Length: 155
Length: 215
Image (cartoon, rainbow over all chains, first blue to last red; front, side):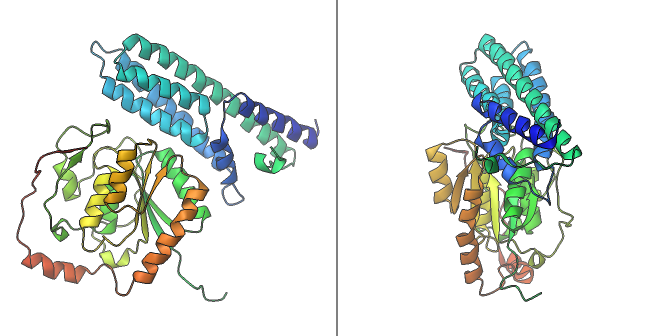
């Protein structure tokens, strides 16, 4: 596949992520902050997000597993996850966290457990999608092409 | 290379979230600011060379029921400059806490509101109560859009309140505050010798929590 085709495939793929609501405008903001002096900024921030999220999801699962659930603690973790997903543009994860916090407030264990599954699902989805996106970018760069920020593609 | 019209502005960013710290640092650097990023209010005060004795009022610890991330254990040790347990790796600048305050020239402080231990609001208050630091503009960031929280911060002297995630357009709003600060600089804003002299004449005050301030 030649570079032009790869770039079009990447553009279409990225566009689909926005159409499906998996990513929002904040992700574009991250891309805009990437330049020659910080060429890996988006990957760097995304990696931090993956690490942070996995730890938080484990902490939440453990907290919900207790005999007597500490909802304040669960809520604090979800609040943090909501914040970091918002910061990277992982819209569906963020929205799932918003719903989750409502069940924390209601101190509803079953509701929380369901929400945790939902958040995990959305997280796995965005992680897979971003990893694919980064792989496509790598292929373009390896083939001697350049990766252009979405905003410049007239998206 | 010609002489710059003004030296680079130095912004101190405070946020316990590594992701948000990375983001704010990038946003500020993109805007050509020199940045120091720390992960707690305690470390921010250390970096600023804050001296407890400079406060006139007794220290009151404000606790907000909305801040679930408050440490429940007595954190009086924080006020003495102890490092609290942090889950994130600290990005402390390589500056010793004993540095003379005059060498740290911070033009603006931008801080997250929700942080364990010392909240951004607590930090704001300590700065505004400090003779040497009160003129440094402070900006608060928060992921929660709570009107009472916003007005409380603005009343306490915060210049701006940004909702997270912070955008480049928000960072662009910082310039006027920085320029105003520079225009007001008629004398060095931190003078450790003066602080030393005043400390001798201050009455020793006990740390006193005069009731928990619930908002």
